[in-house]
Length: 130
Image (cartoon, rainbow, N blue to C red; front, side, top):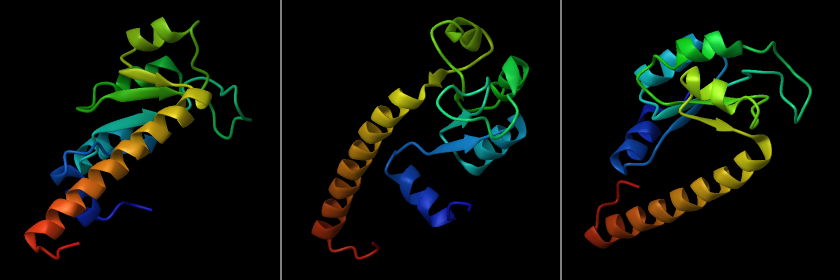
């Protein structure tokens, strides 16, 4: 399901990052064109936290995706042993399942805080756009 243009516009107006999960370099390029702030690309390697549902993309796909105009975070089979190779292939960062949950919680908490502040400032100005 694609995000609504109004939702993307609102998030950009609030200077909030918009992340997209992708499974091919072409999807990263499309996400950048659509206004995404960053993309997850997965799986680079076979995931360790669950059974693989699609073939691993490999470092060449990560290198290709990293040429897009947005940061690309590598996901799937990432660990300390392959972190240097992921960075060399162009990854802006990497996601590890157990850490991703903590980071997503922190991002969502920050997002909710920003949205509450934005809503309060809109309410105080009398604007009823939301």
